[in-house]
Image 1 (cartoon, rainbow, N blue to C red):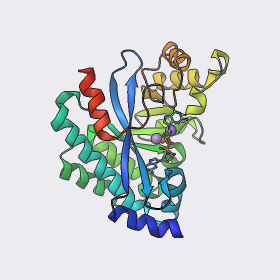
Image 2: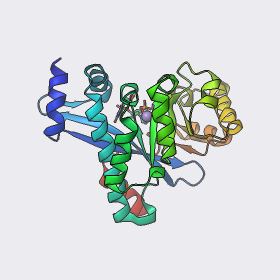
Image 3: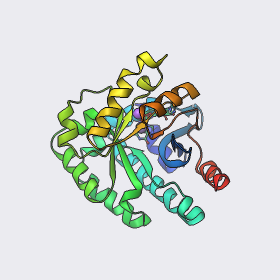
Length: 253
Ligand code: G
Ligand code: G
Ligand code: MN
Ligand code: NA
């Protein structure tokens, strides 16, 4: 309960910020996009992990205003990078969206308003949802369809760990699969069966695919051999403040 009340204050007191983890091409190392990841520095308790406070916010409903703040902040950042860096700015920002947010009937309207206010075109935003979230009938799938209608990309996060039937990929509006890091971080080629299967699936269904959690050059090599076009993980970059993303891009120009 405590953390819930404090989170309410945190938004007003400017204790939250977004970091951005680069997503890079496995062929030329260039930045193809970034994933926004929230951080909360509590004035007394210090840094708190989203793994602790996002579930609390989901339970008490605060994820709805918090999620709007996250989307607005990420879109403003895309606009700022674009003024600063032009065509070299990250092409897409991925934002994690909780099941609770996607279930709100007004979600797609709020996203449309954020895009309009910030002047960011829909194709520069991707929402990351889990398979389980995307599977929900009713307002969730309707919201996904409407987002897609605005040009926003839909990515299935932690792919391979959920309960998705393959029909999900047929029936749901999906653009991209994000291979869960448990399938990236395997010991050797023999363990890479799931990574290979997900790559085949993505190819057959004409979906984009990104491998998450790449920590070693051997993992990157294996994914490259399997045909993965892009990846993210500590090997390439940790989640970074926006200014560091800009510096990275400027240095690569
Ligand atoms: O950044 P980190 O790996 O500590 O994130 C831990 C968990 O919190 C992950 O499951 C991640 O998807 C989730 N998370 C991080 N940032 C956000 C966010 O902005 N919104 C939502 N809904 N979840 C987030
Ligand atoms: O659930 P989701 O995929 O959104 O979670 C992303 C989380 O993974 C973030 O908390 C981020 O900090 C973390 N992360 C990013 N890259 C790596 C990595 O290479 N290794 C590990 N262990 N975690 C990572
Ligand atoms: Mn994610
Ligand atoms: Na993930």
